[in-house]
Image (tube, rainbow, N blue to C red):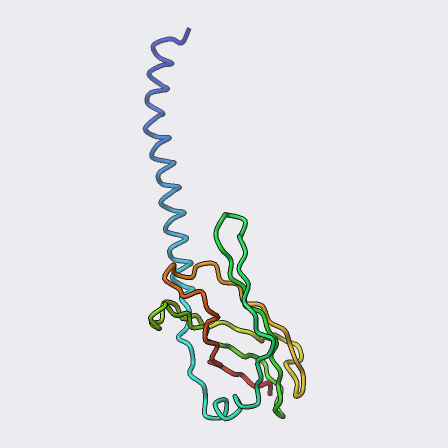
Length: 159
């Protein structure tokens, strides 16, 4: 049976343990906030005049949309397809805007995503075709369930 002094020591430690746990939680939250705040996405660059002229050399083909249940019980919508570079320049990055609409034609979600991204290697060369897969797991419920509009939003040429 604990003595009165041992019980008193245990009750004196309880507030200290609570303060330490709360301090650790607040510190972790602050660290997460500052790390996340430091990684704010940069504003998307608009297409340059050169890139806008090159868009006609890019061909999307075999674009399909499938929905399946993800591991946490939600719906994962995947858009797959192929991109062919019919121009004379090698591409480092190609980004598209995926625009999802509701039944009345209003935009419910717009997301800019890369469909071609090469880092440190050869890019998408002239005449080459590359497949892409775009997963979406947080499309608003008002979405019309149709394939979103896919619009070339960014092109970076390989030097």
